[in-house]
Length: 200
Image: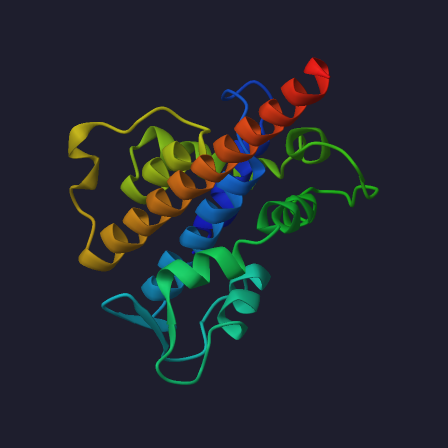
């Protein structure tokens, strides 16, 4: 499973989509990891709780890392808390993971945007991601739309998804909506502060 890596690859292609927020992408990546871990039977979703099940049978280092961060003690972590905790700066970490997919190692790129730093993506990863998106893969389609790197999926895009996948996608959308509201609040506060000083 490589849904998060595919999502990051789609986000890294210059000109493929309008500008997006790093925080939105990070939350969507955390949701993608959780869905993949559930598909690998590494976790079980009990209502909104994430219960560890078994070590993930994968060679994907980011998924192995994600599995190691699952809370082991009851009552276990909620999907919402996982998204915020695991999602912190996750886009930046996938920028590094994308560089590892290139045929030749790339020099580190600091203080650059996601697309500037990861414009070159391993062709096999980008091809797989593009094929999934074109085929209308419902998980990748919804996550890409939530992250702002693709348009809204069609009305029947939820067809074929199981209850756990629908639940995680709903939490991702809710978290991104909350983050957008927080950005708007801070923007209004900054605007009011600037207006105050201009009026003095």
